[in-house]
Image (cartoon, rainbow, N blue to C red; front, top):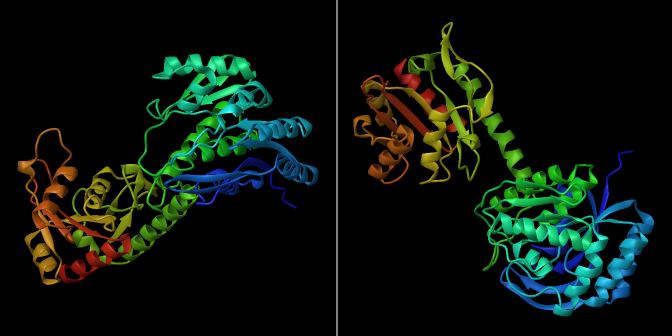
Length: 442
């Protein structure tokens, strides 16, 4: 029988479902853990802030931890909101009793606003809980409260990490909301620093700290070393922020399932392109539309931002023994040319996520018009210097037309083959358009 690793979250409950216990359990489940919990406090909370809190009696917190650890093989745990001195003491005692490896997320306030730790409990967190953990994951504000070092840059973060580690004899990860998206990892045993580079991504951040610390816990429980766990947790949170849904009127919650949704979408897009290639490779008439440089068909994930978010054929579609032939595998980032067409179009209409390029001729344009396709164009001779033809050209053609058309063409330039691009919502859709043209043109 398959055994699933068990992890424990000791934290508060977020009635809005974005942070706290709720975020931790979603993270654990996504990363293949069986999540258990000991609720420390019930909060009246939503995306706009924390409106009230009710701390559970310390013995109830202890009994929850005892119940889980008595029955299950729990080796790693994490803490979030602890609320009061009495709860901190109960958690310290329980961690020692059950010999738990602990990730401490020193939650002081909610992302959307509101205090989550009584001011008089902070010294106890520093004096006792810090020395009971293996890893502590403060953001820059929390690191300042724990170390007394105001963090303006990475040099300050180095100083803060050393002071926190010296107090707790533990590893420190300072998360980088104020470090240009980077995190600083300090290994107490080796005294080594590692910067985990990242970027500031667009999206909701409610629950991002909880999600990060629970991801660290899950990866450490899997046997990853500190730095690798930090790297994977960083990527996990960035994906969760980018995939955040718009919920409520305040700070949107992160989406812990985002990368699973993206993986599923990438699979479906690959399948969609495969289906479109089957259609093309069985359509002899399509050979008449293949340009000298070959053609390619591409489709992007929703919210695509870069070329690696767009799938295409690695070696394009060529003419081979009387039929179209796809050369190479389907992969994301395989085509810069057609991918840029799609990315430019998506800036105007996110539903237009696919394109295929075919050869240009006045007769083909006439057929497109006959089929009722909306047509726009650009002139390569007008292209500004230091720009991408597809970025500028497609944007220009869309601006001229007013919205994304079915067809964008150009008549080429010196050394540049004229081209027609068909755009649509999916690879199969643009392939249907291409085949209709081919059947009339062949």
